[in-house]
Length: 380
Ligand SMILES: NC(=O)c1ccc[n+]([C@@H]2O[C@H](COP(=O)([O-])OP(=O)(O)OC[C@H]3O[C@@H](n4cnc5c(N)ncnc54)[C@H](O)[C@@H]3O)[C@@H](O)[C@H]2O)c1
Image (cartoon, rainbow, N blue to C red; front, side, top):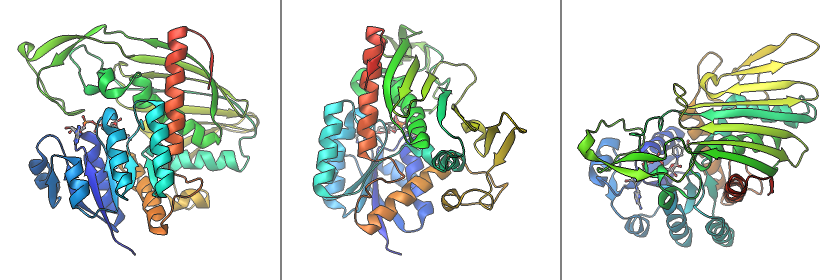
């Protein structure tokens, strides 16, 4: 098996998860990391040999095969472009960029270089999500009538909760939809094999102002601050989004996305109703899939590679009863991406999300924001 050298840029919540997942592949060594804050300390605690405060220096000095970009959204474009222009394959966190034009340019650069490009829409690689796609593909659901669900979190519930994600300069025009709604939409489009064609969106900002900490904090770091550590800040991105949509395959759907829903930590649910069966999946009970039938008893399919379809079996690492979850989706996503790197070319239609999917999501975000602002249906 060929060995690959990887580097990770941005070592907050998700950068560390990338490092852990890469090490589980067996054929990738994490040679270097780049962090604006405490690079040496982070490298020491994660046992990474080299540390850099500047990504350019890291990409110029280290002979990396692939770089993982895990910084806030507003730096995705410049870092990915810099890496591609130096011949380095790119795994980019979602959302791809902060604008459609940036995403178009990145896709064009990636195509020109012929390098492998992936967007970490990791939810595709929960075994039961993958199995949903197999069931749709093999016709077990029939025609898709309608789709529904939600993605709910509570980590921005209080007006003292703060993150770079609350500022447009860092996260882009949309917050909750771009941050987690894109995961939900990518999952639905992956499972159904169809794209969203029209949207009607409703946004709400419940905390019109928030208390911004005067010290830097990483996402989910749970740091407790005292009143003198805050400044009042006006909020202009949504806490909540509700999106009704139509798909190219004729299906209708809707989703509710919120980061201010008390008690729900990271709950993504999706229901797909077809002419033969219906399915419901819940990320907080991710090893089970509910199967609804009209003419026979409803069922629950549990993750067990010996009874799942052959394609799902291949992205499942452990036997039945051995729970697989969020970290495993990173491993399976990266496994597919490094297989493409080993093959030396970007697959025409990979299972992992690529820059085409990233661009499609950027177009979706832009039109959902437009629909919410103009209070009307918008065609994609
Ligand atoms: N796929 C997923 O499930 C998932 C989950 C969480 C976050 N994300 C995405 O990952 C990205 C990072 O999110 P996070 O939650 O880890 O944020 P975070 O705030 O926890 O970490 C970001 C880190 O990047 C560093 N950084 C910022 N600019 C940098 C630069 N120019 N060079 C080097 N380091 C820099 C910051 O110092 C910080 O340590 C976002 O785009 C987010 O949307 C994806």
